[in-house]
Image 1 (cartoon, one colour):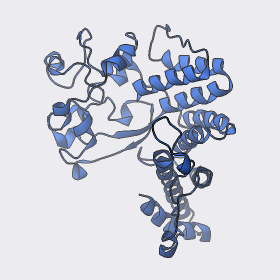
Image 2: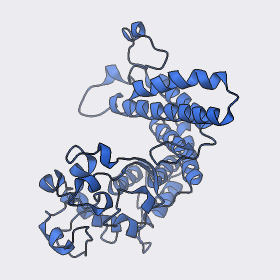
Image 3: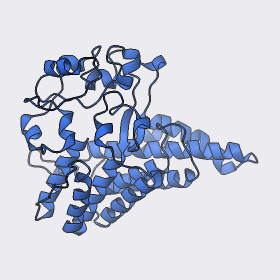
Image 4: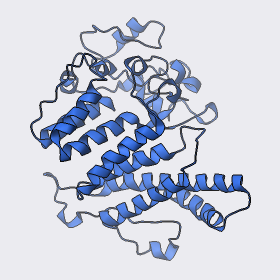
Length: 349
């Protein structure tokens, strides 16, 4: 993926720098180049999170602290890759933020026609995610994380998922056009989809042609029990008591729900409600970024500077999930607050 981004950058960058008398062509080239920088920043950010060791009680990583991955950009030669060691976190994040800055500049005028293409709101969202992670070593980064999270939401004029959208048996978590929460998603089509090697085949219990109905992915009972009974997100999993009227794209929803094991996940629906046709069900969109993530980033980042502000922001999120306003965060220190916030992120995502 990084190689593909590098190839696009190597191809587009000289043309953009050279300029053109054709304004429309130049605008298109700038947008393509900006998207390539955004994608490359995202790819390296994921690698940073995967490979940078963190202090922990299980493994001694002190000799590897702060090391991430080698950087390979559009100018890296084959000979240079033969001696290209892992860089420290500061160097990699400097590279990531530089790519995001370029993407921000190049995508200022971009109006996307596909949810799969990163626009300015996505760039701000990537900034927010990266600064929150980077902030573990730089406290000034947390204020930037909160600021970019707010900018991402404002730029796209996004709003949170409602209960009706969350539980939609046809469009639930497979279609960005059914809500105003999704910021970025992968798209598929009938021409490039199979029956089993697919996200929905593995994650949707209603995709009867897939693996999920056989494996029935579920959560621990302890996790389920911790979710408040009046939190509508709890309907993402099957209550052993079966007291809730779960919706399903199956013709007989009640019989289908009765066939599921306790605590199994009825959240992600096959595309278009196509439970019996993989060419329909597997063409749903796969979410990569939602505005709710930005809200959680803002709350955590603000909570580091002022616990009460963070708790207030968390409550504002939860008041959209526990609709009677009864949610209270009882944390008295940041560590407890962060644990509660991360638990609620687990429920959300």
